[in-house]
Image (cartoon, rainbow, N blue to C red; front, side, top):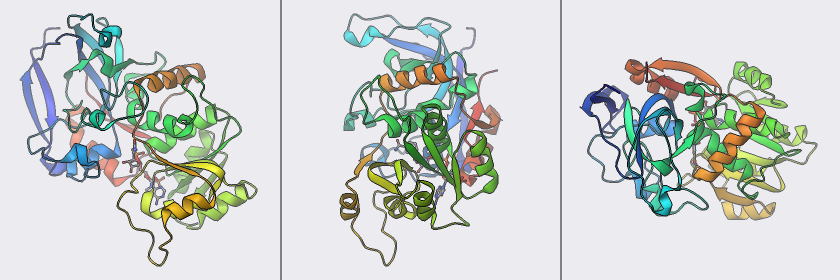
Length: 363
Ligand SMILES: NC(=O)c1ccc[n+]([C@@H]2O[C@H](COP(=O)([O-])OP(=O)(O)OC[C@H]3O[C@@H](n4cnc5c(N)ncnc54)[C@H](OP(=O)(O)O)[C@@H]3O)[C@@H](O)[C@H]2O)c1
């Protein structure tokens, strides 16, 4: 391997301009751990919030972390050293030097329902994240990278694509993903929504995409969007969804907008449909003058309102099999160099991207 030091970006959650670089000695993998050379990191909206000190809605995660932290959770890398393997059941997952791997977001969330304790294993807060050249991971905190994707593409999967996958498949049994014939509404054209568009389209669903930009909607059409709506020029987009679906509504809504969109989603969802609450609704007010209680809105159409916190490792692997079977490539909007991390964060936060923003780490 040769290198003796790790290069890392760190934040004290006090703004993009205060991101700093430092070096540290190369760590060694312990029992059931591997050392990974990080090749590419994709950014999520969460990462911009962490760096700005605004990621404060999960009470178990954000509090009391004054020391610098390495931001970001999503990476594609190569295993460069493997620690000793134990005989415990957690050592079922084995890696060898040269394997190409992806990080999982909450490292201990392996299957089923996420628990509070798993939230304490989130990469890029509260744990040190992946915007560094090397990192040690537990063997179970990684999945195999799909072979048809570049490092930059594969790095886009852990949060954005897994969250979209869960929004579409969470109520179906593991190993039986679906969506054919269902109408899926995607809000905006960020990482989660564009992943959801690709997944729903490949599954044989009908897709409706909203965006503030006609140019982005044209790109969404090229990815297979059946209908598009500009939510700036058509603020009553919920009515448009009902028209486009013959008065039926969308079966699944990827609710990324939160305060501005949730109320409208209740008017755009089909009877018995699902609103996947992905963006921030907690603590947000209903629109002024409309104090209708969310519980009442939910029962009016007998919908299930279910929050999503990413997804477990086994469903990530299920999704990768689907990506491979359908040859799906995540959409990489722009790739920044490692030295351009600040510009990358600013670019994502300002929101002109379509799909994912990536930082190339390795040579
Ligand atoms: N619960 C979870 O596990 C989970 C996982 C991932 C993300 N999230 C959350 O989901 C949200 C999206 O994340 P992301 O990573 O996809 O973000 P992102 O890549 O930064 O995309 C944000 C996009 O949201 C769209 N948008 C903004 N205001 C909107 C509105 N009023 N109506 C519709 N779309 C709007 C914009 O699309 P246009 O430019 O096309 O208008 C913008 O590009 C964030 O709140 C994030 O924190 C949650």
